[in-house]
Length: 335
Image (cartoon, rainbow, N blue to C red; front, top):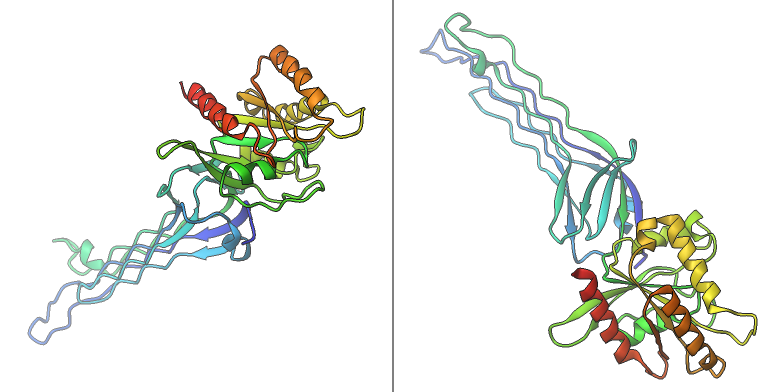
């Protein structure tokens, strides 16, 4: 399935049906009165979060969504039928904006949450409603009111407890595949991951948390470089950032510099996001040149007042301790 996290759509609610001007024409009632019925209300456009959906793909290729109009009123005091409302389902975590003003209209963070994106028009009253002692034969009725219409921007922000961040090729995809059932594409070149991946990490039968692997973070990401700000938004909701770094054979490589680079991008994108609790993790410790950095990074993390761990996803070293540490930090963040 193609992952689409942005879409612009046009929605139009149904117009209300017009009221009817009609009079009784019965053989034994020569002075029959008005009997024009009311028009039906137009259908509304409703957007609802559905936990079974994970992409806005359907809206990318079908941008126009119209609800049904209400039927017009009829003679014999018959009211028009109400127009059928249109239900649009989106993934949980979808934020809905007015595309013209930029105003946020709704944030559907829970399964089943919904909003009325466009209100249906009201049906007009038929002439039977205007009969009175002084106006026994009204020859007018109300027109229906038009339904609302608007341009909307849908933006999907993943719902996860933990965000895995770091430069490309530091082992985020490998880690999420080892601690959860997620199976992202893994290879030994940058930008293996082109879409965010979600995985559920189980601690025991009752305790678990959701982790998101966020791709595309490079210098300039906040301004859209690489895969950039398109995916930074997916860590906005997380409670904890697990910051992965690694070391290459190049003696000039410095994971502390990589750590500062990513945090600078977070701060430029969102100061609130940069202030989230972090866990610094040295990955790929099975590589011979990585061991010497473990003590250096531990000391660096203490100076930064953040926790530190060292792991190797391929060998499994430190993974159980990492899951427990993450769960403990999440509990502390919730207090």
